Length: 168
Image: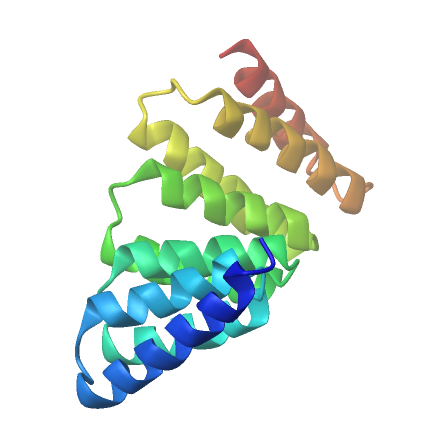
């Protein structure tokens, strides 16, 4: 294992030289990102992914990878931005709606919870009501919103929505 560390450093230097000669080669950039992740240097992987996405903005896998790294680093606002980009590029994929809703729920706050509930609902709509995580997310958002808005006459709407989600 100790022999691999100098080898990885050598490989990183080699790829840096290749990148300078092959500016637009996606494979070289992706290998550089993979090496940084394999070494556990997530901040370097984030830097490489951001530079990569400046060149190749339409790479959905890179946006998803960056979002997952941001979530693992507990950088939820940045992860939310990545999921927004994914939803704009591919609005029919329920996984992106669900992940975005979960990030918003984690961020908390009334506005984020209301938006999260909408994205959980869009996940339910896209999956035909078959996504249990999204149904449970609607219940959690409704409960959290009712806690935040206690005494504002919205309890009737919230309890009805919560019971409908629980029945499904």
